Length: 281
Image 1 (tube, rainbow, N blue to C red):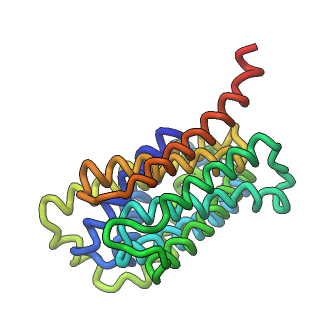
Image 2 (spheres, rainbow, N blue to C red; image 1 turned 90 degrees about the vertical axis):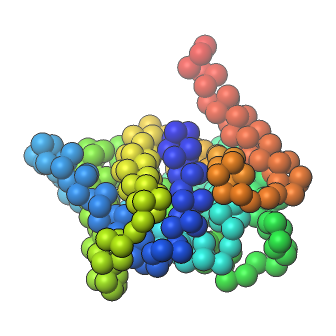
């Protein structure tokens, strides 16, 4: 799950830099269409393991993926890559509370403390990016909508991943997202064909790392971890995004953003340290 958040952390800068050449809907629909081809090829030898749970879970997760990534891409047209990552973190933390009524997974006290710490850290990181104000605008609101949808996707996988084949589930998820988005991508194929060299490398990263490898890693993680722990581990995504935004994206951050990153790390380490104690004993 940590590796998945590392891969997704870089996508915020990549998406932001890609939106000058491709519209949000075309970018999201195109990346999932290409990822679907890769995942279907991987899934074909395993097709006899396809079950009803895999189809239902993959379809529901795919709907959530399509909505979450689309709202995130729209938000990135009006906010920084760093703010987008931090707001996504704040929204996905609520997956722990969605899982309580929907799955009966009541978060223990230590997890609630970790979520609260990460949420405070996310609040310090969410607003006041370089040149920005403290009031959320349309870009931030779109990003929060996407984050809430991502939280629901975590809950869906927590329900279906333990009983499904991971690669088949990932393939159905990507195919569903593609089916939802592609009818609205007007002239997307021609647009991708006109991409320059740097944009093609960005697209390759979004497809392979962000839409194939990272989702499969998440599915593998959710075969063992509760929705609440996965939601907390998702909080590492903005910490990684902070590093990528500074090193590769040329963005600037206020000193308090580093305090926010430290709080997120503290919350994650405390919960995972406690979870590992019975294993080490």
